[in-house]
Amino acid sequence: MIATESLSKRYPRVTALDRLSVDINPGVTGLVGANGAGKSTLIKILLGLSPATEGSARVLGLDVATQGAEIRERVGYMPEHDCLPPDVSATEFVVHMARMSGLPPTAARERTADTLRHVGLYEERYRPMGGYSTGMKQRVKLAQALVHDPKLVLLDEPTNGLDPVGRDEMLGLIRRVHTDFGISVLVTSHLLGELERTCDHVVVIDGGTLLRSSSTDEFTQATGSLAVEVTDTDACPDGTGALLASLDKAGLTTRPAGRTADGSAVSGRVLLVDVVDEGTYDIVRDAVAGLGIGLVRMEQRRHRIAELFRDDDAPAPHPAAPGTPGTPGAPAQAPAWGAGWQQKQKKSDKRAQQNGGTVDAA
Ligand SMILES: Nc1ncnc2c1ncn2[C@@H]1O[C@H](COP(=O)(O)OP(=O)(O)OP(=O)(O)O)[C@@H](O)[C@H]1O
Image (cartoon, rainbow, N blue to C red; front, side, top):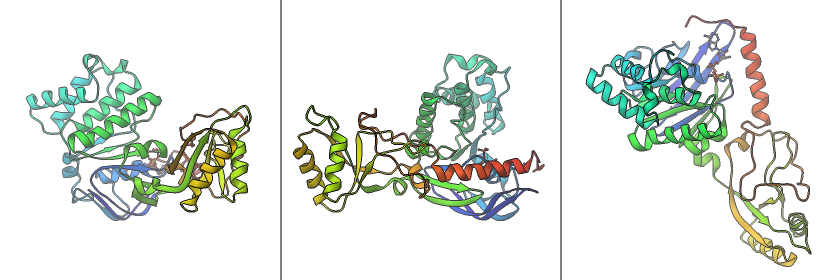
């Protein structure tokens, strides 16, 4: 679908992309990076809207340097910024965009009605868009990207400004763009966590360079950890603490399941136990039975993408205080960016500041 080869984009004071080589296959791909990592720059180059300084890129086999117009005929684009005229309705706007893409009037109207229904806009599609909520505006922006039935859509931060429910709905819609219509998707986000549920593949960039490109499964593959949750009893009022001590004594390595951005544990009732071999399961079971407490669950645990980008030297998690409230069964609320990402984010922010509003005409 997309192939870049040593792609660079240099502005007078900032290198937005630095020799980026990446291949993106059909499906739903997440392009993730902190603010200023170069995501929007890459999208603009892929659409043939901004020339690369060095290197090359092909989209659907077409050269971005010379075949931008052909690419834009076949590719839908949802920009990050608010681009909707306030005085026209969603229907008028999307019909207009469909006509601009070359659809005849009747087909443009039919496709508009179908697409707006698909993104969940009904009666309100006849109202001026100036009165729309952020969620409704994002849906219109998605609809105009889909209306000409492209083979690929490039979605720049589609969940920006949405509340958690709105984010989930938008991510569900994006997933269905591929499953229902077979349209491939490249979606950018600075939130790692939201992409692991939506994407088949994730490309991570930082400071314009490729950090990692792998399938979501590879990112989150099963680890050698067991998540264990136990109950308390009158005889053993801190079941988790007692189990931790018992497993430590048996020579197993244990730690609390999660930590917040400041490194403190949030899921005090869930312990992670490193699996040494099959015998680990028996040791945990016997320890629970020996303490006379109940076993709520014992399951193989998967990584969350954000965990892979935590600094190794980040503060170690503290064992939870007895009785720390937690959500049994739910993974700990990992920060969108681990400590490593936060440092990189600061670097990127600094880079953006250094840029000091310099705007390249490109
Ligand atoms: N026209 C421009 N002129 C000069 N510098 C630019 C221009 N466009 C982008 N940059 C700089 O290039 C870097 C990458 O910007 P880009 O918009 O691609 O990042 P991004 O990952 O999309 O971040 P965001 O999510 O904040 O938009 C930033 O440092 C930005 O300030």
